Figure 1 (tube, rainbow, N blue to C red):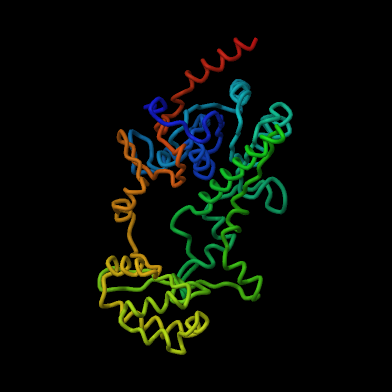
Figure 2: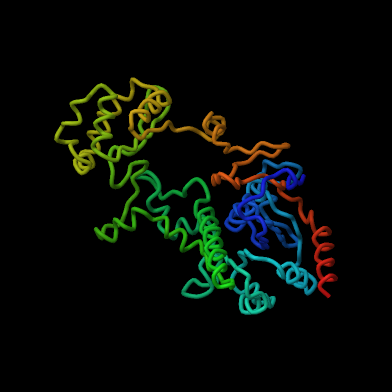
Length: 388
């Protein structure tokens, strides 16, 4: 279903994006652009984006994984290994502002569609390549995957229980932050093009983006020379900053300064703890973390996580109940913030980017495979005829 006629104009209205990417990093990037008004043409290979089959669950044969990151796009299917497919793509790029792709470096070049060809032909085009490691260097040209990037780039090494195994973050954080950085880079390049009139090549890699997430662990290493270790939910630099059990549910406390610590222990009925020399400063609390944890666990056992966390937050103490996905999606504040799209049978996470005059909107449902091939082909033929 096309909602374009009812949706408000987005901040990126008039921006044409050709999306050759698959799986997550690229599609997440282009969905951000599409949510905010860009016209996105999702071009899939003859076999389709493999995430269409990454289920169950499925809706009318398409997996939820695909549906979650491919709204607000027109769906095309092209075989770029064929001359006909390449001609179609070049016609599509004639008036495009942005090209996003995540082919293994060298693939587009093999087809005669590398940046060395596209930039002279389309000098205003912003060509964003998302890859694992980039095209050159010791790992240049190798394929990249989220979990492998988490393993290689140190994220797994600091994630997990102190005495447990290195653990993958439970969502594809590297792919998603790579998509965010790609969208950010595209907006920077669009802004610069207003001055220069020229596009440019954007080189965004999972490797670089994974490394960029290593705060504060890399900063700690640069200053101390000590290799960061796993600490479970506990923070390496702050205490108390971890999960605690309560009478009902778990609570996460993120106490970052002495004032917050004093407010916490006052709320728990143990104000003298704020003046205990073992806990006088953050450095003291870190040194005596085990004793502090035992003390807090005994106090928190009298409370329920949900109610206590709200009371602490209102008093200025960072705290939150540990909720599962269902609890979060049903939370009244999630609804208040409009973070769940629920329209005509389509349910998904909404855009977190809130603009006052040009908000994000749902204009197109995730496309069926090749859904808009004929429509776009007819339009391109009309443009070619009128320009002849």
